[in-house]
Length: 385
Figure 1 (tube, rainbow, N blue to C red):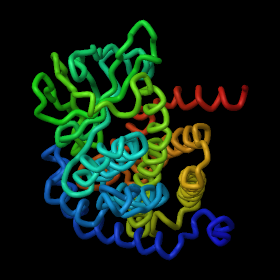
Figure 2: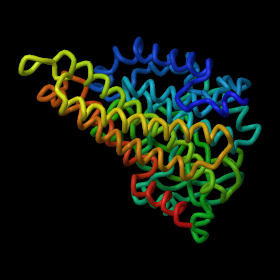
Figure 3: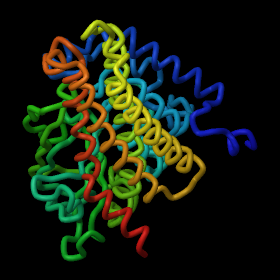
């Protein structure tokens, strides 16, 4: 325990390093050959998802009794970072499963719910987290989806928007208001299965980046949810949503440092090969300084993300640190991937080279799981209270 307390943030334990190396190997051997085809098809290859389950990446923090790896948020962070160096879409499928679905199911699920649902989440079932709506994005607690009492359960009506993994998911953590007059104190979390009568998955969004990741709408028309599928206590949904997103923001931070690293690695390799005016681009001081600045910002973001992950694993509240890590990592990723497009010159603007995809994939980091302005609000409250 003493070793872990005093270990430098980027010095991994033997277990963490072995795990990171295994994910790196998977990313190179299984993800990289599929990136172009998945981007073109707008879909993560199901055979790749099966590999994620096989390697234990879809249940990293879950206990072994449910088929999980009994790992840590730090290990989730490492997995998402390594996958994002190659493909952000593959990474977000793993990230959402671990931080937004498995986490609340394990943290707030009853013993019966855990025994019934979690073994599926580690074996072959993809999950999704449904909070956002067409009319409530940043104002997450202005949601309009209703849950009305019925005999033995609840009737859901309303719609959700921007649901990551919505196209493939079979289990959904859905937030609805059981008592609208109570505002956010009426929000309750439910677990819904795909195929429930009155519950349909809507259109898949055609996006700028993370194109292989499915982002869909969800619709509820008198969808019945039994009491056994209420997650946590009635009216506790706002607490579950906030706490889950605090963990989720570490995953997005990890995605952003991975994307930035992937772009920078591709650019530095190119700079050593490409010659202009009789020498490699890497020999020009003007370019060296830009790369040095980018590498420094990337390292700062990595330290913030790792620190927030380790704090969460130590049982600390990370509302502030998670917001800071997600804010800075997403801003850094935009800057670094934009620079990398420029460093490739005209080639950077073509799909023949990887820079443009990293650039497109970077933008979502400042938007989902809380926009940059919402992170600033969270940080400001903490600093000024």
